[in-house]
Length: 315
Image (cartoon, rainbow, N blue to C red; front, top):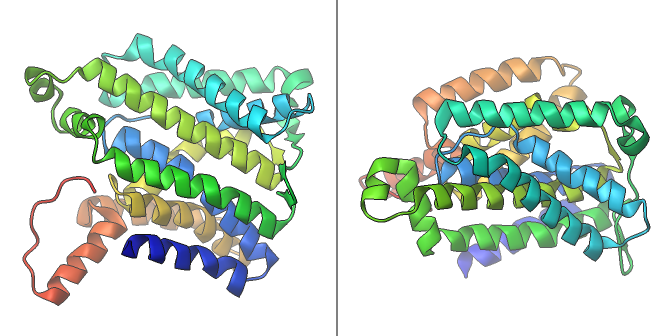
């Protein structure tokens, strides 16, 4: 109950304290929260590397554009995004179900490059390298072209995605994912269907990314290939690692980092410094604080309370 109250209090901060520009940025953070949480299911909880997570955001974004261009509303768009994301993920995951680590990462990288090639070479359908404008989501009196409305529209899916991800850790599937992450051989020896678990994690991850792409397209009103390229996928991976892999709170912190920090560098007139600082911070976190910001905060809290740091599973 305390966590619910804390989330509600935090969610009320942007529209109450900030102007439209920062409320608009907060709406983008919510979209990336969903994407980061999806990658966390795949990497943080199942130990599988993907370099095409942003590509699945692209699948959701371009599906939204194509379905919306026929005049369909949010429900049809969301249903189409979920279906296309699932089908695409199955096409990628099933042939590679026995792969893991670097080999799986390379396969997902190939998929991302193939999707980018398709977008660039189907300009009549997708706008190609020039990108396309996406109609805003209109839900009742809410219109995603307005910052406050965009924030409110994105808040509901973000909260639902958070609740589902938090619940996943308490289910049999969540425990099987942790077993696969720790060691596939041991997991298989106790009856865990490793391949099925990995595919399920990949499907969940893809749907999360697709929904994030749906929101991102509606909030920004414009999409283009660079929004979903390899660098975008790397930034999502950075978000998971810096926030704290395997934690719901870490997904929120990581999403805020990859959306707001580059913007702060841009406003300071030093946009080129972000990749350098981001890379250095990632190296520091990976070497010194493997549990990310969440792990650092929990460690500091335990030291403050005078409690010895015990071994923990994924929250």
